[in-house]
Length: 237
Image 1 (cartoon, rainbow, N blue to C red):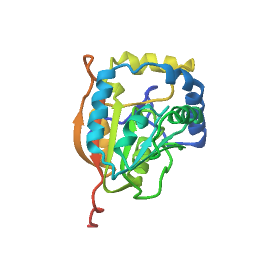
Image 2: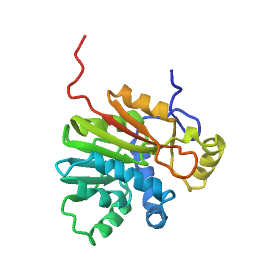
Image 3: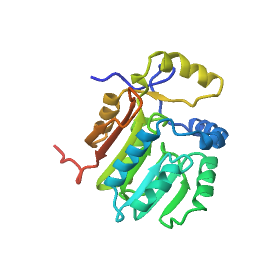
Image 4: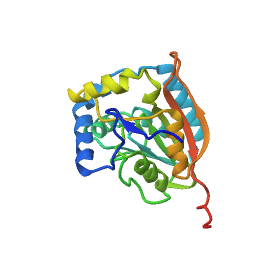
């Protein structure tokens, strides 16, 4: 049995509350401009992920991205879709994404304000849901996964890339992250490894299709997972 997913302070994650969602949005709004200017830490790994995702998408696909940040990835992937709706909890992130979109001709790309911890789309609306560098930042992982699955059509794909903080030096999640949170330099995070994340997905009924690592700089603690929503609900027994 896998150990429970925990927050960086070592406590089991709690259900999302309006206050937690407000605090989350406040943090990301405050750092949005700096975040937009920070370089991608592993550009080669990022490009490999983009290539894998582009190969999974089709110009016939309706796609939802949750936690899109300032829209860099959505701008790259939109041409591979019929329509891409990219969402984020922070108004400033969406504002910056809109500024970027203004210099592109991408009529299929739309940015929206939405929280990944809450229902983000009507049931069965999308062929794929994208979640990059997000699932460790949600308030309630099962709830966020359930919301993403609900948005998928039967047979649709959840495509994610997630930092697994329990695979890092243990001093980082146990000491460094709580200290950074205390001084307002880091958001609340969930700590898990790749096996725990896969278990959380399968518990929600997803079928894991592939688990990969795309990093180009030594040990890669970001896991790329493609999971499929079943074509039909399981039969009652």
